[in-house]
Image (cartoon, rainbow, N blue to C red):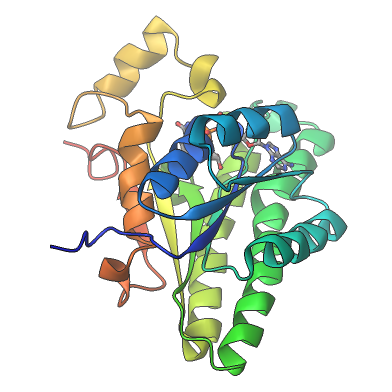
Length: 256
Ligand SMILES: NC(=O)c1ccc[n+]([C@@H]2O[C@H](COP(=O)([O-])OP(=O)(O)OC[C@H]3O[C@@H](n4cnc5c(N)ncnc54)[C@H](O)[C@@H]3O)[C@@H](O)[C@H]2O)c1
């Protein structure tokens, strides 16, 4: 029987691919048959991911906050791999402070990467997909934007992050409505707590105890565990899903 999760013959761009969730999704997508293009500001880390994957993975070092780099990266992926079928729009950063103490620089840095960076990648990849669709290309076209439970219900000490992640949900719904006519499906994923370098600093014993108490499944997740549902949204099985926000959070959004 064919694997319903297969990503054979797909070229998928993964941003933030040097570590954490991005590395997990890149590895999972490659194991399901995709050719992956690995984008990260940390080129060495992205190269490590490519070495772990082997095969035809390509590395593109630069910042998603720079629209010039993003366009060049999309051009390079098309030149090297021939087309783009998927974008895992994942690169992100945190800068924590309570609202009354947050600097404008920290507000802006997070908005630039986590919201405007998501827009730059969506726009550049979407333009390529629209041109391909207009030329009669019927291969799958999927975009998965990474939000967070923080974008659903707000945060304490991360208003910049919560605002950006709520914005990602808005981007997803607008883009899904505009681009459905080209057969492009666009969805969001909202993680709870994933064990990655990003959460290393906040995974203190006290935080973990409090967090665990709010997660019905009673544990945080690994990059590998969240990668499966992200790849599902890029598979044929998800061909009739667009404009949705999938919580991958152990039930923390519904609570007890
Ligand atoms: N880890 C969690 O618990 C959690 C929860 C909810 C949402 N998320 C979201 O998941 C995504 C991945 O998070 P993670 O935990 O793997 O984080 P991480 O810090 O481990 O990895 C993020 C990656 O993004 C890259 N990056 C940062 N700025 C960049 C830029 N300007 N251009 C290109 N690459 C850049 C980093 O170099 C890094 O490789 C983020 O969008 C994050 O907000 C994570």
